Amino acid sequence: MIADRIIEQGTLTTHEGQAAVEVRIPWYRALPGSCIAGATLSIDGTQAPADTLRWSMNGRTFSFDELVNETDEWWFPLDSATLTGQLALRQDIEEHEVQVELKVYIPYIITDHGVLHIEESDTKTMKAEQR
Amino acid sequence: MNTLGTPIQGVTLYSFTRASHARQYDLESLIRKVAAEGFGPGLELIGFSSLRGFPNRIDDRFAGKFRELVQEVDLVPTSLAVNVDTGLRRDRLLTQEEMVEYMRAQIEVAARLGFPIARVQISLSPDAMESLLPVAEKYGVTLALEVHADQHGAHERVLALRDRYEKLDSPLLGFTADWGATVTGFAPSLLEAYRRRGASEELLAAVVALWDGFYAEGPPNTQKVHGERFGAFIGLAARHGRPELGIDFAINGTGLFGPAPIETWQEIMPWVRHVHGKFFGIDETGEEPSVPVRGLVAQLVENGYHGAISSEYEGWHWNNWQDPFEIIRGEHALQRAAAKDAGSSMVTDSRIARELLHSHLAQPARG
Picture 1 (cartoon, rainbow over the protein chains, first blue to last red):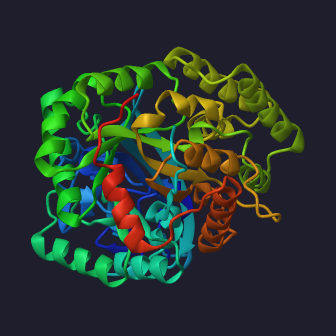
Picture 2 (picture 1 turned 180 degrees about the vertical axis):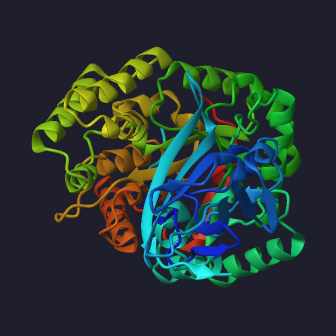
C-alpha cells in the first residue's frame, strides 16, 4: 500500500468553480474503472458535492456511476488520474489543504464478505494554479 | 532417490514496486538494472503491474522489443504473474466461462513474451484448472497456481487441486510455492513501521504474542479458522485503543505471515514448478529474521528442485527507509549460502538456467 502518494504534489488547479487534482493508485497493479469505487475531494475542509465528481484517465472522463460498468479502461500504476469536483477555492489563503479519500476493490481477493475493498486517504498542502 | 537440486536464482520486479511506482525506473531501465546487479538469471514480472495495456493491448511490436531486451541483457524469463480477477465486475463474480477467456488472454501474452510459466491464483477451483488445461496446451505455458498465505501446502483447497493434477497427469499444471506461507515470526521491519506510526510497545508485544500463538497452534486448514484469526487481530487493535490499525494487523498477520511448518510443502513438492522466495528483510547478520530461508532452500535442494526461485521482497509495503536493491542482494547471498550448505549451488549462469528450466517443466509430476 502506497497511500502517501495518492495526491500528486503541486497539481491542484482551479477553473470556473471546478477544482482538480492528479491522483496516483495506492496499489501495485492496474485496476479497471469498475474497481474504482468512489472518492472524495476536500479542499480547506470543504468537500466537493459527490454528484459533481468526475474521474479522468487515459484521455476519458467518467462519473463514478459510469465507472461501475467500465472494464475496458484501466488505471495503470505509473499513470496519474485526475479527480475533479465543483469547489470554489478560498481566495484569502495561498496554501490549500487538499484531501482525497479513495475506495478501490481488489478484484482477485474474494473474502467471506465479498470482494476485498480498501479505503485510503491522503492529505497534502499546495498552491492552486488557475487554468 | 532424487539427485540434489540446483535452484535457479532470480527475482520478481514486484520486489521493486516502490521504486517503480515512484517512476525512478521504467520497465526497460528496471530490467537493465536487474541484469546489471546480477539479480538474474531468472526474471519474473506481474502483467498488470509492469505492462501498460495488459493483456488486450500488448501488440507484437512491444512483444518483439521485450524479447530483444531480455535477450540483450541475458536474462531468462521464468514466470509471468497473471491475475484471477473473479471480482472484476461490480454486480457479480465472473462465471467460469468468462474466467477461462479472461485467463486465456493473459496466458497468451505470457507465451508471446517468452515466459514458460504463468503464475495463477487460488480462486481457481480444480474444475477451473481443468478447463484451463486446453489453454495451457494451446500456448505451451505451464500454469503454476500460487500457494500463498493464508493457504499452505497442506490446506484443503490446495490438496483438492493436487488431487486433480494427479488425475489429469499433465506437465502443464503445477504450483508456485510462496515462502510467505511458511513464516516463523512477525517481521521486525513491520513492527518498526507500526512503531513509527505511534503504536505502543505494549501493543506490539501483544501483536507478536497473538501471532506466536497461531504459529504454535499451526496453520489454518480451513477458511473458517482463517476468518477467526483475522478477526482476532482486529479485536486486539480495538482493545488497545488503535482500531485504525486492526485491518492492517489482520491482513499482514494472516495474509503475509503464514504460520505453516515448512514440511507442509512436501504434500505438493512434485508439482512445485516455481517458487516465490518471499521475504521481508535481511538483518545485520545477513539472515532473514522471520522466513526460514536456509531451511527452505535446503528442502528444495534435497527434493531435486531445478526450477527458479524468484526472490520476492514484500517489505516495501511498509519499509520506506531501506534500499530494496540492497535487500535483494542480501537474500540472494543467503540463498546461495544455504544451497552450498546443502551440498549444492544456486544456478546463476543463464545458459544452464535455460536448459534446466526447459527440462524441469517438461515432465508430468509423479507424486
